Length: 399
Image (cartoon, rainbow, N blue to C red; front, side, top):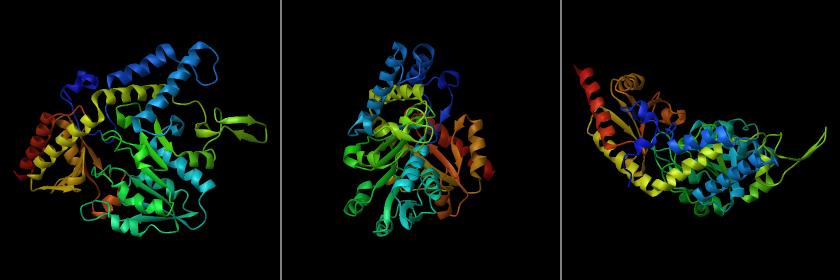
């Protein structure tokens, strides 16, 4: 069970009345992760992989053990399928750049959807001189239109790039519906799992994507670190993304050869302390239990949704039967930024705007909305105070 986990998050010691409903943007930081990063820099730090001395070799082992921890957390076939990047965004850019260089032919199609975060749209725009981008539609509830998306998969489709969970509504994508067709046509699949992985158990072996990306900072871990899972086939087929130290085999003044495997995608000094910190945050999540986290957050989100639904002035987006941890909404007669400013005065943090999902907003003909997103530090009291505060501002507007 999840009890009083706020005490594990130092921010609440300084600001005990904070109600933080912006976990979808970035989760607050757990004490064990902060301590791990601090200890790494204070007592253990050295550059890794090429140092013979003890300090370097010990930290190299911890770094690679952390890669194994990530692999185990998502149940990937091997830690050799785990590539560390500076963000999930960079992970998608790595894939788009390498596919453009080594795989895509002129006229090939990449299928995305109107539900995507900009990070799973713009990287494909950058290589669009070679490819054509096709978008699957969303329905009136803001859910993925599976029939439309699947109908658009054809012999020209060379990649499907799709979110696992919407960062606007919390809607979970039924990946299996899509893979029934992609696997029949041997079409690779990239999944943006940034919102999914912190809330639900991921089994890469069962899901079987070609590429899967997520972020450390949404897992109560450090910023500046993304994770890219890549199948063996693509690790062997694709060339490097960036050049520099760590990824080379031999270098001449006029040519280079590169290491095999995932190392060729990790140029330069890696995010050492961040990776150590991520391992600590995963230990924390495993200690609490990812299934317990999902159950607790889902119950809390359902309760919040039911309370907000009682307010006739609130427009809710998405189908709650398929949502978890996120609720986005607008209030009639009140700009979402004004709402956020009012809530901030109450020490309630929510996110407002287009949430890096402008195609979604365009679908509903809105500029943006307000989004509350829960984490394991939130409580029923937080929800009650949040809902009461919204009712208070509604009454002010009507007076």
